[in-house]
Length: 235
Image (tube, rainbow, N blue to C red; front, side, top):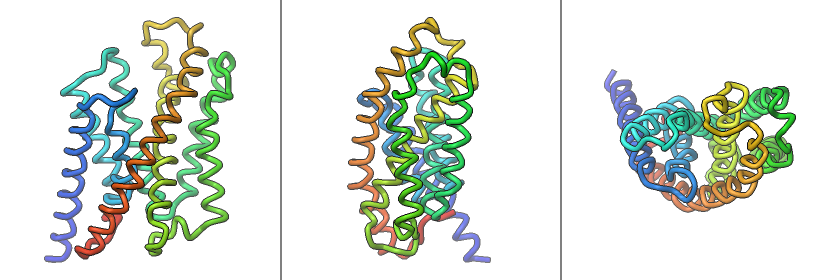
């Protein structure tokens, strides 16, 4: 019983700590988006898919309550950070096929939507690349997602961070187009191609610095947890 209580306490404390850090980073101005996106991979690795998603959702909610976006509709996109952390948590457990299924469903929903006909599909090149890296890593380099293998942790965290942040982007696109949030923007539909073209250049830069930061901080935190006897993901 004591062991179970200690386990529950660890889950709650770790999730709460990650949520607080996520909220703190969320109120800090990022390059284009909030700095909280750099935490998604670590949330998934430490707290797992359930705890990581919960921490990201809660942190994004608190962050946007403290510092709302200029357009009210943009606050809803904070949910995508939870989806990114969910993807990272699944990958931390070696469940890359579940993440691939998420990519397929979300991307498919966008591609069959009428608005997708006016959007240059090449602008999603970074999402296509992330999906390719995900499938290739899962099929060809299975050890990369083997949670029991301490080797290559930096590469593993970096790849996961890239796939998680692009899943975040893909879910934002899903919310914008298939879920219809674009109707709430004070922006003419005719400008949608220009918005996606701009995103084709800014989004990969966001992914780049997210991967760089995650690859440095993530392995250090995970190794510290190993030394303290804490197995991750916790959930």
